[in-house]
Length: 170
Ligand SMILES: [Zn+2]
Ligand SMILES: [Zn+2]
Image (cartoon, rainbow, N blue to C red; front, side):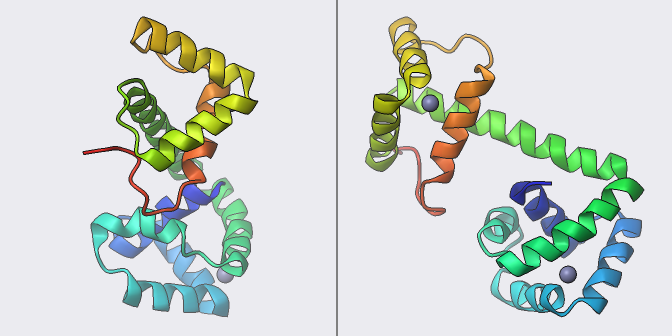
């Protein structure tokens, strides 16, 4: 389970949309695990806007809590395979959409200057991405889904931007 999946899962937990059986399980863990419980408490006080939950959690999970929850979740994966798969798919889907939006903005020269700079410096060192961006720029269009490798690189690139940084120009 990666950080994002964990963030989604916690967002569901905090906004009440988590599967009740899974919720009971996680409640049980929190009750016995101080770092996780403290995180849950302070988290609920600092981030109340439901719309920001997912984004917000991702950058606030302390390392210790991340590790503890991750090992708890290994057990949860066996008990709730369908729900866990759903989190995984949700993250995948969102990742693809984000990469697509990002590449589209790059083609239309609508990236923020910081994002554009990142793309430029990445492409200077990465032949695959340079070739990819060159070819889509030439044809001025995205043909279907991105190759897995580009997908990965662009995702990492986006993740290296500060959380509040807007990728796109208005
Ligand atoms: Zn814990
Ligand atoms: Zn690359």
